[in-house]
Image (tube, each protein chain N blue to C red):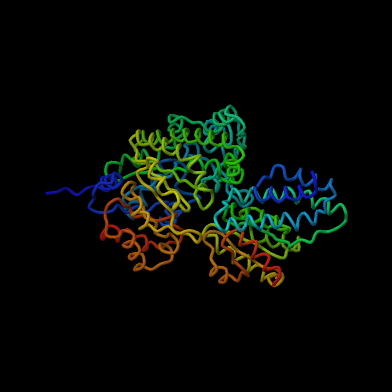
Amino acid sequence: MASDDIYKQLYENVLNGDFEQTGELANKALENNIDPMDAINSYLVPAIELVGERFGKKEYFLPDLMRSANAMKNALEVFEKDIREKGVERKSSGKVVIGTVKGDIHEIGKSIVASLLTAKGFTVTDLGVDVESEVFINKIVEEGAEILAMSALLPITMPYQGKVIEDLKARGLRDKIKIMVGGSPVTQEHAERIGADGYADDAVEAVKLAERLMKS
Amino acid sequence: MSIEKTSKEIFSDTLELKKTERCPVAPHWWGIYKYEVLGLDYKKDGWQDGGSVADVYIEFFEKFKPDWLHLHIGTPRYFKDSEIVAKNGKQYIVINDSLRQLKKEDKYFSTNSSSDEEIVDFPDYLLGSRCHKPNVDLSSKIKIDDYIKKYIHMSAEEIISLGYTDHLEEISKEYGHEVFINVHIPSAICEIFDPLTGYTGFEQGLIAFYDYPGGMRYLLERCYQEQLEWAKAYAKKGAHAFSISEAYISPDMANPDIYRKFVKHIHRSFFAEVKQMGLFPLCYFTGDINPLLEDLTEINISGLMVEESKKNFHLDIGYIRKKIGDRVCVFGNLDSIFMLHDAEAKDIEKEVLKQVQGSKNNFIICNGSPITPGTPVENILTFLKTGREYS
């Protein structure tokens, strides 16, 4: 398979969500001496961005989004391993700690955001669901995280997002981290009320928000 | 002199699309709220057996007098007299030897038939989630059949003997002749896709529509078939309606064609069978159902319950009624957070009247999603009063 065909196939796999073959294809790319950074930046990232656009236009749905994110992840795993082994460091888009807050066991939205962030080059630590403030804060410190992303699907657990922010303030850490919140009942007003730095309507918007927060 | 109809009669007439003197008022998903309103601690009271569950429902019903009793799946009998212990900041139910034998037979709550666990995470039980089941292998029908036999199948008789219908039986004896009684369970898709306890989990489930379409179709057919046993059990013990909540498959998540290809035909036969049991089949279809409205008139349901609008979709109850209200009775979708929880009485009145639209027929006044803890009692009373007086 020629290099051009491999590039094209990687792009198509992410776009079409053909995740099962993508890891193998990435290995083939390396065998053909394809530059993994070039493959990521010129083919994988544009493909996942187009997936996001199509999702926004309701041309793609959640299963499509998840399959594409999986395809992207499978290729990234192979490429990033190679990059590390060569002693080169691929610049992370940012370090994110993510989780659904205490009292809330809903994980779908949070997991999709985590997948898409990973696919866009963020280093993501997913703490899962029902996460206590202390656990968020300890992980932020441990990882040197730049963004905290908190999800809440229940109106009764939304205030806990505010509690985590208050606890960060009490520990003198608030100014060191950007905070984004989301979840079905969460709104921009709620985000402002609790002092978060940003709010996103859906997973695709959440990635854009994370990119903006990293630049701000 | 005409005799005033009971709420059960009004409810039944409405679901049959007959002319009625008023709309039934039917708040649904009382959940933890019913404990809060009654001053009970849901971690301690009213869950151990059907009798104590029934007591909570009855007390809540007597406080508000809605037109229906909206019951959950029920509780198994083996927790009665069980001990609760605290461990690592959580509460656990201790399953002793005598309970263990009973629990083994319960595939709804138990992980498997040879479980040797001695304690069960208590809040998880109350939240309706259960122990993990292993993931189902969708590669062959035989494997799916084996999975269902091992982890899911319970006959109506077994469901009854485990105690899952005890709450209904008690409530039905006291109220069944005049109040409409519905029992609600999560749909098969919810059971399959639940991110924590589902047979595939959410992500794998959705992806399986693409990668294992045959296996997924067969799993769905079999799981809905299994749910008919629950309907049978509730029908035997006096329910008037049987509802399922259909999540994870709405067009805001999955392409509407997935519903049409994989689920619609199953829904059609499933609800037809529920109807044959003498129950009104109801479907609480969450998410954006706008693209599926016509489809939902073809699946043999008597009533369609919908969510309130969310930030990524709009569900105009007037539009939905206009579009399908002549074929399916539509439930209202009063916003449980921004109306019932947050708004003032005058706003609730206004919204109820807006949803009724001056037409008493084919419509049931209802909230869109679970009543949130902290909702002022006065707001629920305003909701009920407005519905009764002005509809």
